[in-house]
Image 1 (cartoon, helix red, strand yellow):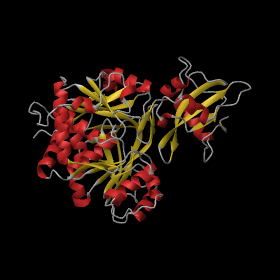
Image 2 (tube, one colour; image 1 turned 120 degrees about the vertical axis):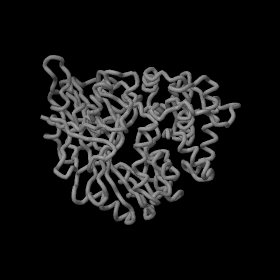
Image 3 (cartoon, helix red, strand yellow; image 1 turned 90 degrees about the vertical axis):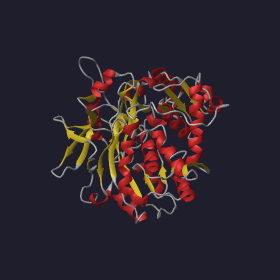
Length: 487
């Protein structure tokens, strides 16, 4: 059987069309409604000559239509390419120049900024709801493109097949049993993790409860309205949710990961959700989940991300880098054969993470090889931020690095060498100049340095050395303003 993503919804629509497929705020769509709406959009896109292999870009604020567009693309064999609504106009332009979509669909609030974009209402006008012919599709076809940043700041498109997406989310089906009765999804649907857990819920026959943004109040409101029993939140989001006066006692699945998970956070989660099972996971957009630390193993293995999943193979290279191989790997980066060859060598994906593995097979993340910053699951290019800042008045040199953070994994830090007689810029100064970049790329702190280490031959910033020097001099609690100093 071909494991096509569109078949998940059509199968559930046949069995129970009135069952909830997705919610956002007070709005709800059933599997029957998603099925018909996706058929209508697929028919309309085919009328626009969209065929198997074409890219369909979707630029939208949080919306249930995102689910419809993804399924419609899956049924056509088109590649769904969601864009973040947080991107500035220049970032969206760069992304569109790279992916060259056959059509860009945008919600009415964004379509005016999107050049040749059209609204979904314009696309579907007059279209019918008859199912499209999917007989020529194969589950090895790519169905989704996740945009992420490389070390240069240029977007990279991670292509993932129907089969890989299905297998990434299928793992949770057998283990969860009847524990899932509504899956709360706090991740945005331009992010791999968002779709992972939407599909995991659907494969369990359960609806996905979305939120407009991952604030504690908004998530708490969704919980009170829909009473989901399963979720996966990064540690920062769990902290927000645990601070809200909301009853979490219905949860049976309460998972986490992406950044460091403290024993204290796990203890507070278990106190708030005594009936819930918790796991800690580690993975990447390019590979899906790589390791899982099961509920019964957490106390005995603090700081670990668990053992490798059986559906793939993991090993640690001689230089300490974590490598992964398996059927959940991406097909490659869109139109980037050299980048793909560097990332996946002889079937092994190079994660860029450094790690160790003990005699029992438990893995610990110890650092990163690559210069990119990983903050709350987002990938950030230091050189992109440096380029956007340009020449700053009163600044002789500037470098962007990532520094460890217990909540986000890493956060962006600006290291500056002030010009003689000048004061260093504040965080607010830098953010004012970065208004066209997504907020998660903005520096959280400014550090004053006497010099920035560079390579002798090319003058490139030696970020690893700079980061080590900063961490050695960093106070126990670094403020989010100018004033922290390295000597």
